[in-house]
Length: 158
Image (cartoon, rainbow, N blue to C red):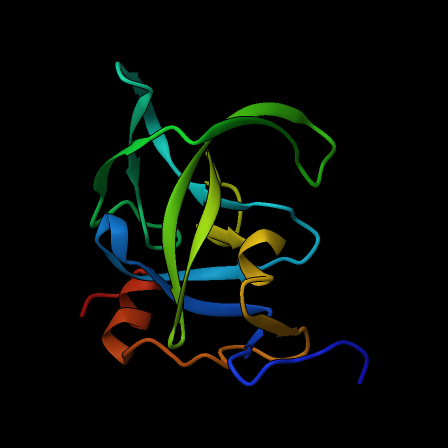
């Protein structure tokens, strides 16, 4: 196999369950996307604050607005990002801890409205190169969320 895989490399599939511990989100279903440079998080009600900070709201569940989490973070950067449809827009970038399986990395994460997307978060190359290898034919190699979390994510009562 080409390349040097280290023993601390974790195999992940094209979709996984992750957590964002630095902002208090214990479960979020993510799409792993090696075609994207940075990660992207579904965020809305963005409000820029003094001191180069941003406040935003996150809905961690697909197709649901329950368990909204209001977050305040320092602005790390601003980037022009081109979507898969070819549309370009400037986005705010924040640093978030991303836990996949037993590994936690710091991910540069753009904030955007992903309401029309199937996943509330996309994990890009910058986060993945910190110790992950992707098997695009598999899902949930890093583990599954508990059944009640999966049901809530599908909009079913627990």
